[in-house]
Image (cartoon, rainbow, N blue to C red; front, top):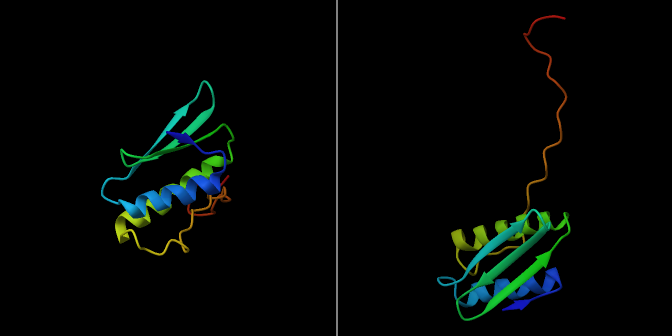
Length: 103
């Protein structure tokens, strides 16, 4: 069980782990609200890689990891992940004028 300090190292090693054994590799997330800590874990039962953070902006990184793993699981371990994008948060849209009651 290894905690990696760098997100880029964690992402690279987790992708290598998945591509080496796609049938056995899995990942999990754990969030402790009282501590404000997020732990991501990727394992294949022989090797375990973890990343721990308490930064709120790292939630976007977790979303990107989810998108990458979904792409790899759906399209196979050799799928191209360079085009994987995370959906941007939808901005609050102004109220539409329609057929409602006039004020």
